[in-house]
Image (cartoon, rainbow, N blue to C red; front, side, top):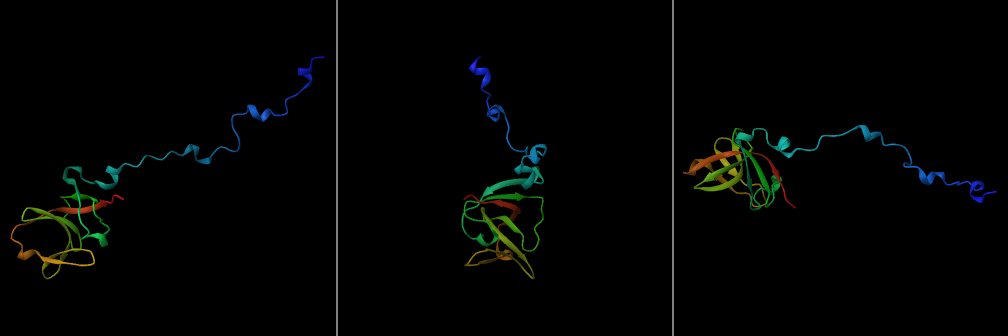
Length: 133
């Protein structure tokens, strides 16, 4: 009698390709996240700018953040804007009350009266920011 024919392999599970139950999420495929769809509503009027400084830290904008700025969004009270003052870019919160002022959002809060600035232009409204850690 052949010895091999008498010995049965009791470890048949070694040849199986799966173990356990299939994942119920196998049929669910989520679309990948598209950052352009999330952050840019109107691409023709949107641009990006890097922010330097800590003046807007309480608004969630830290040093080296990337600002998403939309020129087509009209600023309203408490909007965060990017403006040009005497040819220099500045990111501040605009306060519209009896007079229009620009405000930092940090420990040493500073106000600028817009009416007293001779060369002032709003470039756009900040719609979101990306902080780099």
